[in-house]
Image (cartoon, one colour):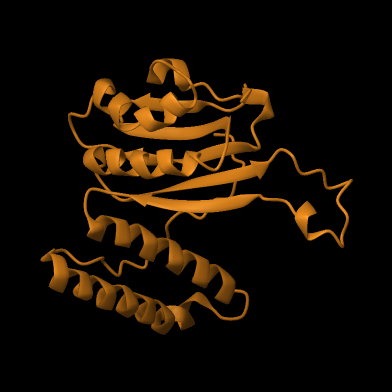
Length: 207
Protein backbone atom coordinates (compact mmCIF):
# COMPACT_ATOMS: atom_id res chain seq x y z
CA UNK A 1 0.00 0.00 0.00
CA UNK A 2 1.34 3.37 -0.99
CA UNK A 3 2.13 5.76 1.83
CA UNK A 4 -0.17 8.29 0.21
CA UNK A 5 -3.05 5.80 -0.01
CA UNK A 6 -2.97 5.01 3.72
CA UNK A 7 -6.39 5.46 5.33
CA UNK A 8 -5.07 7.45 8.28
CA UNK A 9 -2.68 10.22 9.16
CA UNK A 10 -1.53 9.32 12.67
CA UNK A 11 -0.23 12.00 15.02
CA UNK A 12 1.82 10.99 18.08
CA UNK A 13 2.32 13.69 20.72
CA UNK A 14 3.92 13.69 24.16
CA UNK A 15 7.11 13.93 26.15
CA UNK A 16 8.79 11.37 28.39
CA UNK A 17 11.46 11.98 31.01
CA UNK A 18 14.06 9.24 30.64
CA UNK A 19 16.20 7.52 33.26
CA UNK A 20 19.70 8.72 34.01
CA UNK A 21 22.15 7.00 31.69
CA UNK A 22 19.72 6.25 28.87
CA UNK A 23 21.47 6.84 25.56
CA UNK A 24 20.33 7.24 21.96
CA UNK A 25 20.85 3.55 21.18
CA UNK A 26 18.48 2.51 23.98
CA UNK A 27 15.91 5.07 22.88
CA UNK A 28 16.20 3.91 19.29
CA UNK A 29 15.49 0.34 20.40
CA UNK A 30 12.49 1.41 22.51
CA UNK A 31 11.00 3.37 19.60
CA UNK A 32 11.85 0.73 17.00
CA UNK A 33 8.17 -0.22 16.51
CA UNK A 34 7.45 3.35 15.39
CA UNK A 35 10.27 4.02 12.97
CA UNK A 36 10.16 0.53 11.53
CA UNK A 37 6.44 0.93 10.84
CA UNK A 38 7.23 4.19 9.07
CA UNK A 39 9.58 2.25 6.78
CA UNK A 40 12.76 3.81 8.17
CA UNK A 41 16.07 2.04 8.85
CA UNK A 42 16.87 3.97 12.04
CA UNK A 43 15.36 6.40 14.50
CA UNK A 44 17.31 9.26 12.95
CA UNK A 45 15.81 8.40 9.57
CA UNK A 46 12.29 7.89 10.88
CA UNK A 47 12.13 10.82 13.30
CA UNK A 48 11.01 13.28 10.65
CA UNK A 49 7.27 14.01 10.51
CA UNK A 50 5.38 14.04 7.22
CA UNK A 51 4.68 17.68 8.05
CA UNK A 52 7.73 19.94 7.91
CA UNK A 53 6.31 22.32 10.55
CA UNK A 54 6.27 19.55 13.16
CA UNK A 55 9.50 18.84 15.07
CA UNK A 56 9.04 15.08 14.79
CA UNK A 57 10.78 12.83 17.34
CA UNK A 58 13.50 14.61 19.30
CA UNK A 59 15.87 13.47 22.05
CA UNK A 60 17.57 15.96 24.37
CA UNK A 61 20.31 13.94 26.12
CA UNK A 62 21.20 16.81 28.47
CA UNK A 63 17.65 17.09 29.78
CA UNK A 64 17.06 13.33 29.30
CA UNK A 65 13.83 14.22 27.50
CA UNK A 66 12.06 12.52 24.62
CA UNK A 67 9.67 14.82 22.79
CA UNK A 68 7.28 13.66 20.10
CA UNK A 69 5.19 15.79 17.77
CA UNK A 70 5.25 13.39 14.84
CA UNK A 71 2.85 12.40 12.07
CA UNK A 72 3.02 9.38 9.80
CA UNK A 73 0.63 7.68 7.41
CA UNK A 74 -0.69 4.24 8.29
CA UNK A 75 -3.56 1.90 9.10
CA UNK A 76 -5.29 0.41 12.15
CA UNK A 77 -2.43 -2.07 12.54
CA UNK A 78 -0.31 0.80 13.87
CA UNK A 79 -2.00 0.22 17.23
CA UNK A 80 0.13 -2.90 17.70
CA UNK A 81 3.24 -0.79 17.19
CA UNK A 82 1.98 1.58 19.88
CA UNK A 83 1.59 -1.27 22.36
CA UNK A 84 5.14 -2.40 21.68
CA UNK A 85 6.42 1.19 21.97
CA UNK A 86 4.82 1.56 25.39
CA UNK A 87 6.53 -1.60 26.63
CA UNK A 88 9.85 -0.27 25.37
CA UNK A 89 9.42 3.15 26.94
CA UNK A 90 8.41 1.61 30.27
CA UNK A 91 11.92 0.18 30.48
CA UNK A 92 13.67 3.55 30.09
CA UNK A 93 11.19 6.07 31.52
CA UNK A 94 12.13 7.87 34.73
CA UNK A 95 8.56 8.88 35.60
CA UNK A 96 5.03 8.46 34.33
CA UNK A 97 4.00 10.24 31.15
CA UNK A 98 1.02 10.50 28.82
CA UNK A 99 1.22 10.10 25.06
CA UNK A 100 -1.62 11.24 22.80
CA UNK A 101 -2.29 9.49 19.51
CA UNK A 102 -4.82 10.78 16.99
CA UNK A 103 -5.98 8.90 13.91
CA UNK A 104 -7.19 11.27 11.19
CA UNK A 105 -9.36 9.63 8.52
CA UNK A 106 -7.82 10.66 5.20
CA UNK A 107 -10.61 9.06 3.17
CA UNK A 108 -13.46 10.97 4.80
CA UNK A 109 -14.75 13.98 2.92
CA UNK A 110 -17.06 16.04 5.12
CA UNK A 111 -18.36 18.02 2.16
CA UNK A 112 -19.45 14.87 0.34
CA UNK A 113 -20.74 12.95 3.37
CA UNK A 114 -24.46 12.18 3.44
CA UNK A 115 -25.96 12.83 6.87
CA UNK A 116 -28.19 9.78 6.46
CA UNK A 117 -25.36 7.50 5.41
CA UNK A 118 -23.84 5.91 8.53
CA UNK A 119 -21.04 4.37 6.49
CA UNK A 120 -19.91 7.88 5.56
CA UNK A 121 -18.99 8.73 9.15
CA UNK A 122 -15.42 9.73 9.85
CA UNK A 123 -13.19 7.11 11.47
CA UNK A 124 -11.17 9.71 13.38
CA UNK A 125 -10.06 8.37 16.75
CA UNK A 126 -8.14 9.64 19.77
CA UNK A 127 -6.15 7.40 22.11
CA UNK A 128 -4.40 8.34 25.35
CA UNK A 129 -1.50 6.09 26.29
CA UNK A 130 0.45 6.03 29.54
CA UNK A 131 4.01 4.89 30.16
CA UNK A 132 6.20 4.78 33.24
CA UNK A 133 8.77 2.79 35.20
CA UNK A 134 6.12 1.32 37.54
CA UNK A 135 2.33 0.93 37.68
CA UNK A 136 2.32 3.50 40.50
CA UNK A 137 4.07 6.07 38.29
CA UNK A 138 1.54 5.47 35.53
CA UNK A 139 -1.38 5.80 37.94
CA UNK A 140 0.11 9.06 39.22
CA UNK A 141 -0.11 10.59 35.75
CA UNK A 142 -3.63 9.26 35.24
CA UNK A 143 -4.67 10.69 38.59
CA UNK A 144 -3.15 14.12 37.92
CA UNK A 145 -4.78 14.35 34.50
CA UNK A 146 -8.18 13.38 35.87
CA UNK A 147 -7.88 15.97 38.63
CA UNK A 148 -7.07 18.64 36.06
CA UNK A 149 -9.99 17.66 33.84
CA UNK A 150 -12.49 17.59 36.70
CA UNK A 151 -11.24 20.82 38.27
CA UNK A 152 -11.26 22.63 34.93
CA UNK A 153 -14.92 21.72 34.42
CA UNK A 154 -16.05 22.41 37.97
CA UNK A 155 -14.24 25.74 38.30
CA UNK A 156 -16.85 27.14 35.92
CA UNK A 157 -19.34 26.75 38.76
CA UNK A 158 -17.30 26.61 41.98
CA UNK A 159 -14.26 28.28 43.49
CA UNK A 160 -11.12 26.17 43.53
CA UNK A 161 -11.17 26.23 47.34
CA UNK A 162 -14.49 24.37 47.29
CA UNK A 163 -13.16 21.42 45.31
CA UNK A 164 -10.86 19.84 47.90
CA UNK A 165 -13.45 17.20 48.69
CA UNK A 166 -13.80 16.27 45.02
CA UNK A 167 -10.04 15.87 44.65
CA UNK A 168 -9.97 13.77 47.83
CA UNK A 169 -12.59 11.42 46.35
CA UNK A 170 -10.53 11.04 43.18
CA UNK A 171 -7.49 10.23 45.31
CA UNK A 172 -9.53 7.62 47.16
CA UNK A 173 -10.57 5.97 43.91
CA UNK A 174 -6.95 5.69 42.77
CA UNK A 175 -5.78 4.54 46.20
CA UNK A 176 -8.40 1.78 46.20
CA UNK A 177 -7.35 0.73 42.70
CA UNK A 178 -3.69 0.72 43.70
CA UNK A 179 -4.37 -1.25 46.88
CA UNK A 180 -6.11 -3.89 44.76
CA UNK A 181 -3.08 -3.96 42.47
CA UNK A 182 -0.70 -4.28 45.42
CA UNK A 183 -2.64 -7.25 46.77
CA UNK A 184 -2.22 -9.06 43.46
CA UNK A 185 1.26 -7.93 42.41
CA UNK A 186 2.93 -6.92 45.68
CA UNK A 187 3.77 -3.35 44.59
CA UNK A 188 4.55 -0.27 46.66
CA UNK A 189 4.42 3.53 46.58
CA UNK A 190 0.80 4.36 45.89
CA UNK A 191 0.00 7.46 43.76
CA UNK A 192 0.32 10.70 45.67
CA UNK A 193 -2.62 13.06 46.20
CA UNK A 194 -0.59 16.11 45.31
CA UNK A 195 -3.36 18.22 43.88
CA UNK A 196 -1.02 18.76 40.93
CA UNK A 197 -2.46 18.97 37.46
CA UNK A 198 -1.18 16.85 34.64
CA UNK A 199 -1.24 17.88 30.99
CA UNK A 200 -4.45 17.55 28.99
CA UNK A 201 -3.43 18.71 25.55
CA UNK A 202 -5.37 18.09 22.40
CA UNK A 203 -3.81 17.67 18.97
CA UNK A 204 -2.54 19.08 16.87
CA UNK A 205 0.23 20.90 18.75
CA UNK A 206 3.37 22.35 17.31
CA UNK A 207 6.10 22.69 19.93
